[in-house]
Length: 467
Ligand SMILES: *[C@@H]1O[C@H](CO)[C@@H](O)[C@H](O)[C@H]1NC(C)=O
Ligand SMILES: *[C@@H]1O[C@H](CO)[C@@H](O)[C@H](O)[C@H]1NC(C)=O
Ligand SMILES: *[C@@H]1O[C@H](CO)[C@@H](O)[C@H](O)[C@H]1NC(C)=O
Ligand SMILES: *[C@@H]1O[C@H](CO)[C@@H](O)[C@H](O)[C@H]1NC(C)=O
Ligand SMILES: *[C@@H]1O[C@H](CO)[C@@H](O)[C@H](O)[C@H]1NC(C)=O
Ligand SMILES: *[C@@H]1O[C@H](CO)[C@@H](O)[C@H](O)[C@H]1NC(C)=O
Image (cartoon, rainbow, N blue to C red; front, side, top):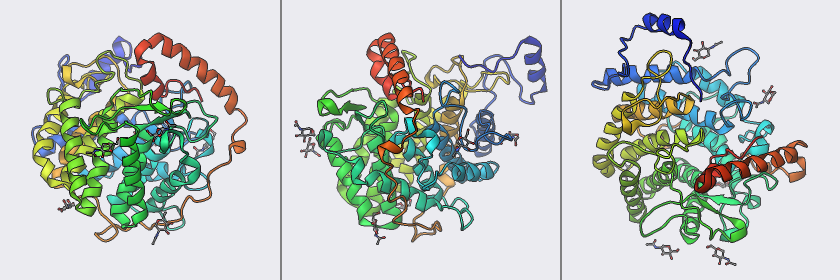
């Protein structure tokens, strides 16, 4: 367990130094007025950023401490954190972290400017790469400050990620199509084809299409959706989305765990497509996914990560998902305005609950994960802070601009050919990779045995990876 609790005297000193009045287990935060929401968001953001050490001299910019076992966080999580902070800036107007966001997202682009830096290839999933790509896309849609002209631009970075994932090397005929979870066939987890890898690609394609109107992006998004239905990862009667399946079983061994981010990434992508095409099929898909998602992941109007929260088996990765659910659903209310009436009241209630349990840590205001219980669960972390920041700052979306496009005020310069030619041959991989895979597999087997039925989710949660 990670905890910022310091020994007795230090706690007393910190508590009395804090300007917030802290009664035991009472959240210092208010969500009553828009100003309260801003203030709450800014403190939760500050507390989240205390996990970031990339701006300390000698440290690597852009990443959270990790990957395990060196630290708690895989590379992708920082990519998601910068996206959360771009939304925070865009919705609240607080630009305090913009320089850090810029430095981080530029440092990690990698030699081919497509978010595949050599340091992380040993455990690089299509989803990991895409989380950085989606944050670059968000920067373009939000008119986040453009990088200097000699640096890679946001739209071009998103296109680069998309192009590497659309390359024929990543789309074999296992399971009739779709992306593998991992990018490299020697990585542990390559044989798994899953909803999040394909959901990220779908989401990015939908947004690139809306932004640029290049038909190629839409074609890929449609193709990805159709495959998701064909393979049964999207159950098209209920609109449940399952986690994935293995290519050596032609993906028929479906792992039926349901995670909130899989629902939200497809719902938001469908909403972008509807917004751009006005095609009723995509409106219906958006509405069905949203209606299923609200019912399933907000059981009493407060977000719950149903597949792991109550057994208490959520991995570090999974502690971030409810934040994406809030952010992406909030954007759906902007681009498919007819959904706002049903979505907005639930996000509001859930956001209020999210901060009520922020009574942990040395300052008595850090967040845990079990929002629906109303009580801090004893564990702090970057993911817990990020999810609450997302839920709280999304409450400000009402006065914010909808995502821009290149014909409605977006300024980011694209390059439709960015990223091409970077499908690194397998023998270019770092020599240490195979050793790490061996160790990873042992860890996976032990974790899977220990966790019984949750073994599969643990695999998806990357606990198996030791690189
Ligand atoms: C790094 O950034 C965090 C968050 O803004 C800030 O609190 C901290 O003081 C910064 N550290 C350095 C060494 O600049
Ligand atoms: C890769 O790792 C090295 C050594 O830790 C570090 O100096 C470098 O900045 C890292 N590169 C990226 C893109 O993070
Ligand atoms: C559901 O998916 C199947 C393929 O599994 C497809 O043939 C059918 O048209 C889909 N139904 C709807 C309503 O989209
Ligand atoms: C493998 O799965 C795909 C998608 O469900 C299906 O179209 C294909 O026919 C299957 N192949 C075999 C050999 O069963
Ligand atoms: C697309 O989104 C914009 C921005 O919110 C909105 O004004 C417009 O009505 C949406 N289009 C459709 C077809 O819903
Ligand atoms: C559209 O995107 C595709 C795929 O990235 C690219 O090859 C093509 O050049 C683009 N077309 C235009 C007109 O930009």
